[in-house]
Image (tube, one colour):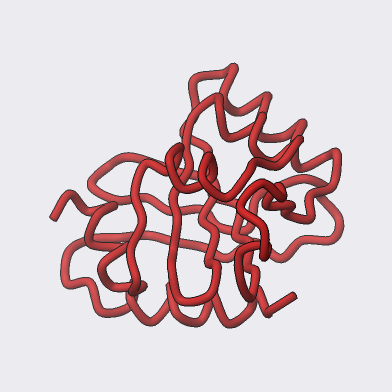
Length: 139
């Protein structure tokens, strides 16, 4: 398994290059269990994201993409969505970034999904962190 820290460094570099107002905070809090890795506010809209990273997709397309999640992370996301918040998953697999948001994200992280379903259910994917952040900005 690769490094989630490298995924964060790539995203941070892209976020730092944005010229318009943006607020973000990397959350690394061992005290408050389940809180997502990244808080992001763009154009007056707040988001909470879990960050995950894998070196590659499973060798067999039918093998589920399994992301390491703790039960309190799943529970936090479920509560945030029920309250009307914006919660999602940013996953880097190899050099590709994937965005999953909304209620289906909880199912995806709780049970995993075959590679084809993981790709098909992504709201967006990009081969670069700047392209990914550009999508979030509506570019």
